[in-house]
Length: 127
Image (cartoon, rainbow, N blue to C red; front, side, top):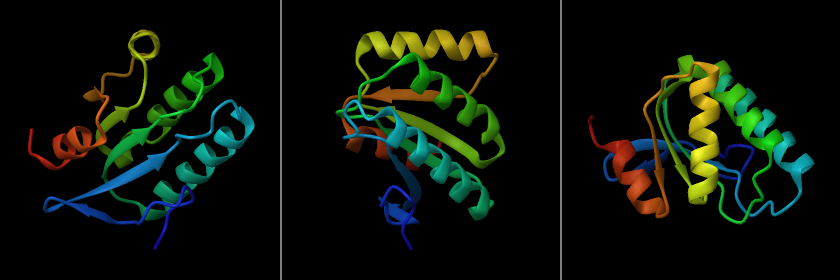
């Protein structure tokens, strides 16, 4: 089965199961990304289980609206998120996201990576 973003679901990696949110390569097409984010949210609710998730933002412009939508999505999907890793954000956008997470009261263990392989490895290892 594939998720709305085109990821194989479930995706098995190094003996674990993860879900990839492919929000990358949307460049400046904010409307398309917002639509995909909603579709992925509906998909995760339908799966109705805790997921180890990595979010790919490579080659996507990160606006305030996108960060706000990601915060809303993390808050609304909290019961479905086991672990969360974000890949492809610049140092500045990581800082912006962390600040927004703190202001929103979200206290999830979220990691940030430049390398998707490191992100996936972290997700499948116990912590």
